[in-house]
Length: 304
Ligand code: NAP
Image (cartoon, rainbow, N blue to C red; front, top):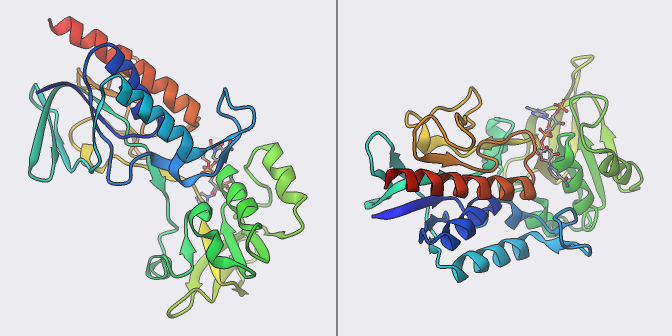
């Protein structure tokens, strides 16, 4: 029986772990089979306060985790497979193993949203990717496409120019959603082209990506576009499958808060991208992790 279980180990979960551990709660962090969350897939982070020269995403994670461990947080690097919040103490399961706690913080983050095409899933890892940082190196000297018009899409495109010959951003509107500074970088990069008002209808290729079937949303006409890789960057979906039916989720599956960071279940709190689809920054996730730990501490005190 634990005082507090934290599910997730991105900046939200890890910051919650630091605060909870320093408060003497000896939290158990169920950190997932791929610990660290989305920062593990980024390279240079330029906007995390305190690092004027920039810092690598995985390095931030390593440092915050060390800090949490220093104060006594325990980690299980595995995925929580189910939860039961209908009776107290709460139960979190990892396969056959059951963990009980008086309070839980959900910090499971969000993951890639896919286009939903059969061909996209069939060619996943064979030219279709959602992580330029992970896979750009495989596309040296090739033509690649990036789908999306937000910050993530532009960052992916910029990163890809380090390896690929040409990078084409395919966007469903005629202007980018990305922040001005990133837009300027993309427009000034000679390796980046744009296909506006365009949607991907199909990823072409039998064994590997050979191109895309693109539809012009204004004319409805389709055309073939030759490329050897396509990076999908159209946003994210919250990792809340195991919480369905246990706590209140919104229409898109994000966790709803009722009282500061508390969910509709008393004693179950939430932090980071699994709740926040608006800001989605490492620093805002960390901030909410801190709030959730403080709220959980207050709740545990109230039980005594
Ligand atoms: P996003 O801002 O939601 O952008 C998603 C993009 O994909 C939009 O351009 C959208 O088009 C397009 N899109 C969505 N669904 C689509 C579909 N089914 N087919 C084709 N296109 C589709 O997501 P994001 O870029 O991942 O960014 C998420 C959040 O993280 C944002 O708040 C962003 O500022 C933040 N972020 C910040 C940084 C940074 O500061 N360095 C880096 C990465 C992310 P429309 O524009 O037409 O909606």
